[in-house]
Each structure stands twice: as C-alpha cells, then as structure tokens.
Length: 195
Image 1 (cartoon, helix red, strand yellow):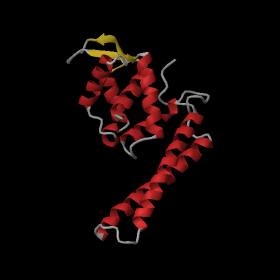
Image 2: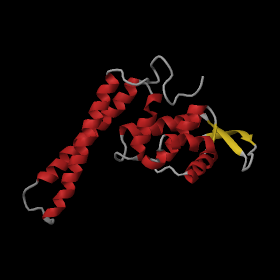
Image 3: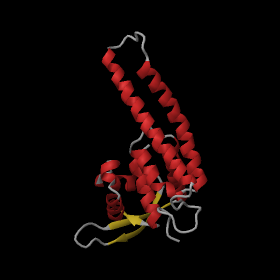
C-alpha cells in the first residue's frame, strides 16, 4: 500500500478540493517528507494518476502567477471508497511500523472511534503472533544450522515487536478512554472535509 496515495487522498478530502501545491504544503507541515518519504514529485504524480483512475476529478484551474497553472481536484465517490479502504488497511494490517501505518495514524480521526479500535485490535492479534515467532527464534537453544550471531536479528525482531505491541495497546487504551476527537464525536475531527 502506498502511504503517498493515502495521504494525498486524505489531504484532498480534508480540504474538499485542493491543488498540488496545497497538498504538498500541508504534507510538509506534517513532516511527511521525513516519516513517509513523500516527495513533491510523487504528490503531483499521485494526483495525475488518481485523476486518470477516476479517484479524483479536476474541479478548477487557477492561473499561476509566476509559474504554471494550479489544477484543483476533489474526491470522486470512487476516491472516497479508495481512501476508506486504504485507511482501514493501514490501521488493520500494515506491512510494518512504517509509512503506511504512520499515514493511517495521521488520518485515523476520520473514522468512528469503535471502528479504529476494532482495526487496531485486529492488528494487535497479528503482531502478537509475530512476537511469539520472534521470541521462539531468539530463544531457540538447539543447533538450528545458522551462525550463532544471526540469532541477534531475531532478538532485534523480538524487541521491535514488543515495542510495537506496547505502543498499540496504549493507543487502544487512549482511544477507549475518549482521547482524540474522532469522526463520530461531537466537534470537528482532524482530516474531516469541510461542511
């Protein structure tokens, strides 16, 4: 799953309509160039590609003062469905604690609280399985046919899975305690489109 794709859809959705420079500026304020490796070129490429896929539609062209014209986009119904699908995938089953998971956490407030908790609980089950596998490999004492120092990789994997589990459990607890304004809460949640 592409974190850039999710983030671009999320920002366009958040503004109702947005042009590439606006999306880029917003993502830079989130430091997405650092944690999701979102580069300016990938933003413009994603906008054009998703417009060709009918996930975005062109709604406006503003003349560029010193530069090129600015094309504004908004989500189509297909784009809204794709945004929700990518968001739920990033929260339930990311490939690891990387850009996709980070993008999902950034935009999780656009979903109802119980849904986010459910998706994160699903992820917890998967990560608990990874933790058991990592622990088994790190603690294995019999001759396993590998150089002994390779076991350090499994210890590192074990440490990562334990840290991820601790953080996920704490996030679920914070959400259950009512922390953060979510889509189904009173007030305007971060990432929700303008009314």
